[in-house]
Image (cartoon, rainbow, N blue to C red; front, side, top):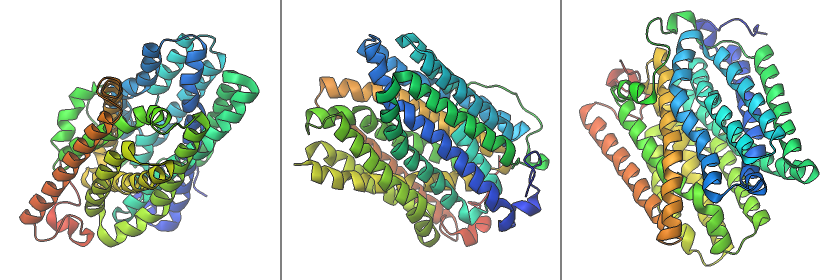
Length: 429
């Protein structure tokens, strides 16, 4: 067994038996984190409304988490590249514990607001885990590893909301907050005692500032060959999906006549499909077709699905379209993460993933504002038309990138066997 305080050597990283255990631990860490996240997120709007918050203030509560992620993610990413992944993960999980305690003690909407603000500041778990898995996983298996993160997301969002509903009926926000704090505490103990350091000293950054605002790191990441272009693509895709995420409950209620319980079932259904796709299917498809093709295919599935969501004749047909959407998103997301991990230099993966996470957070701040406005002002279908146009744009950009790179190299960019020869396998800063 590998002691938790010792980093993995490069020899251990490339031997499957040595890093397999560490990969299981970090996936379990992500699962516990997302279980707590799923526990509390569906309850935020309900309890803020119970405490008398206006709809505008409830929107601020929903946006503050992503805004803080946007501002602080580059700092955590740089820190993980210098001191290692393990300390950053431990600090992030500890921040989750404190945010859940604040939620449990909340007696007004402002305390809920501050609990989400703290959670956003310390929300380094996911992209640090992405960098961790990139450190310990061979290039050919990274997309499958990113798919396991997506599966942990899916399972967490299946079990978390159900558990949150039970706890809320039993003891209001106090029980939900305590439940989240207990899960996060168990998560911290699991990581502290079982998770070794993944970033060896020779791969750590030795120079550079400790802190930078997102817009300062962004030009550096955009300058990395191929990575910058794909980061912009990812921003557009997340912006598109955030239009769906921010208005789907309203659409379900006003267009399809679903109540809160039925909407919850739909989200659980989406989580189930996503978990199967990302945890099982994407690894098999990636090995056969490569990440780049899967990103393009996923976007081409997402675009028509998003357009059709407001126009289905029944909830049965809606579920079919949602399954197509979950398939497209489940294939495209981890495949793009796998590409980014392959293209980013080893000593800058944390920075790359933190910046892309910041861009995603920014999209989830701006996207819901635009989606909510267009839903109320232009009609229920407006956010979905916008999302479709954005997703088609992202797909067209990926198609152009594939064609452009293939024309300049002797092998297509999704061919791992030729990654070193074509320059796609490892970018240079």
